[in-house]
Image 1 (cartoon, rainbow, N blue to C red):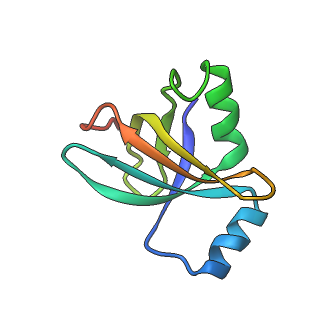
Image 2: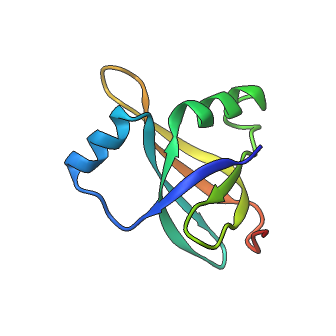
Image 3: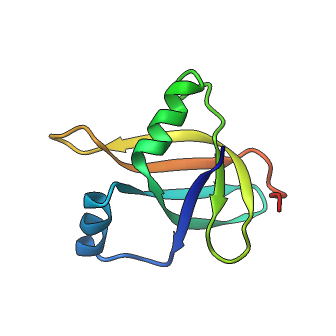
Length: 103
Protein backbone atom coordinates (compact mmCIF):
# COMPACT_ATOMS: atom_id res chain seq x y z
CA UNK A 1 0.00 0.00 0.00
CA UNK A 2 1.39 3.37 -1.03
CA UNK A 3 1.65 6.33 1.33
CA UNK A 4 -0.11 9.36 -0.11
CA UNK A 5 2.15 12.41 -0.11
CA UNK A 6 1.06 15.97 -0.86
CA UNK A 7 3.50 18.13 -2.83
CA UNK A 8 3.89 21.69 -1.50
CA UNK A 9 5.97 24.68 -2.55
CA UNK A 10 7.00 26.21 0.76
CA UNK A 11 5.08 26.53 4.00
CA UNK A 12 5.26 29.14 6.72
CA UNK A 13 6.07 28.11 10.28
CA UNK A 14 2.39 28.50 11.20
CA UNK A 15 1.28 26.34 8.28
CA UNK A 16 3.76 23.60 9.26
CA UNK A 17 2.41 23.65 12.84
CA UNK A 18 -1.17 23.41 11.57
CA UNK A 19 -0.32 20.41 9.36
CA UNK A 20 1.46 18.73 12.31
CA UNK A 21 -1.71 19.16 14.40
CA UNK A 22 -3.55 17.34 11.60
CA UNK A 23 -1.08 14.44 11.80
CA UNK A 24 1.26 15.33 8.93
CA UNK A 25 5.02 15.82 8.81
CA UNK A 26 7.10 17.61 6.22
CA UNK A 27 9.35 15.54 4.00
CA UNK A 28 11.95 15.92 1.27
CA UNK A 29 12.12 13.59 -1.71
CA UNK A 30 15.32 13.47 -3.72
CA UNK A 31 17.30 11.13 -5.94
CA UNK A 32 19.43 10.89 -9.04
CA UNK A 33 17.71 12.49 -12.02
CA UNK A 34 14.89 13.86 -9.88
CA UNK A 35 14.32 17.46 -8.90
CA UNK A 36 14.01 17.61 -5.08
CA UNK A 37 10.40 17.87 -3.89
CA UNK A 38 8.91 19.17 -0.65
CA UNK A 39 6.09 16.99 0.67
CA UNK A 40 3.58 16.54 3.44
CA UNK A 41 3.14 12.93 4.59
CA UNK A 42 0.86 11.36 7.23
CA UNK A 43 3.36 10.73 10.04
CA UNK A 44 1.52 7.78 11.66
CA UNK A 45 1.17 6.00 8.32
CA UNK A 46 4.88 6.47 7.55
CA UNK A 47 6.00 5.29 10.99
CA UNK A 48 3.68 2.25 10.89
CA UNK A 49 5.05 1.30 7.46
CA UNK A 50 8.65 1.66 8.66
CA UNK A 51 7.96 -0.56 11.69
CA UNK A 52 6.10 -3.18 9.60
CA UNK A 53 8.99 -3.36 7.14
CA UNK A 54 11.63 -3.97 9.79
CA UNK A 55 12.86 -0.51 10.79
CA UNK A 56 14.37 2.57 9.19
CA UNK A 57 17.37 0.79 7.67
CA UNK A 58 15.31 -1.97 6.02
CA UNK A 59 12.10 -0.21 5.05
CA UNK A 60 11.34 0.64 1.41
CA UNK A 61 7.92 2.31 1.55
CA UNK A 62 6.15 3.44 -1.60
CA UNK A 63 5.18 7.11 -1.88
CA UNK A 64 2.33 8.16 -4.16
CA UNK A 65 2.51 11.86 -5.04
CA UNK A 66 -0.80 13.72 -5.04
CA UNK A 67 0.15 16.52 -7.45
CA UNK A 68 -1.88 15.60 -10.49
CA UNK A 69 0.68 13.21 -11.98
CA UNK A 70 -0.06 10.28 -9.62
CA UNK A 71 3.55 9.09 -9.72
CA UNK A 72 4.77 6.48 -7.24
CA UNK A 73 8.29 5.98 -5.95
CA UNK A 74 9.93 3.25 -3.90
CA UNK A 75 12.01 5.17 -1.34
CA UNK A 76 14.52 4.67 1.44
CA UNK A 77 14.21 6.64 4.67
CA UNK A 78 17.50 8.53 5.01
CA UNK A 79 16.65 10.56 8.11
CA UNK A 80 13.85 11.13 10.60
CA UNK A 81 13.92 14.44 12.46
CA UNK A 82 12.01 14.47 15.74
CA UNK A 83 10.54 17.17 17.94
CA UNK A 84 12.88 18.01 20.82
CA UNK A 85 10.42 17.38 23.66
CA UNK A 86 7.64 15.19 22.26
CA UNK A 87 9.96 13.03 20.09
CA UNK A 88 7.25 12.89 17.43
CA UNK A 89 8.56 12.83 13.86
CA UNK A 90 8.44 16.28 12.26
CA UNK A 91 10.44 15.71 9.05
CA UNK A 92 11.48 12.78 6.86
CA UNK A 93 14.18 12.63 4.19
CA UNK A 94 13.36 10.11 1.46
CA UNK A 95 15.78 8.94 -1.24
CA UNK A 96 14.23 7.49 -4.40
CA UNK A 97 15.21 3.92 -5.25
CA UNK A 98 13.60 3.93 -8.73
CA UNK A 99 14.15 7.34 -10.35
CA UNK A 100 11.81 6.52 -13.26
CA UNK A 101 8.67 6.52 -11.13
CA UNK A 102 5.59 4.50 -11.95
CA UNK A 103 2.14 5.43 -13.08
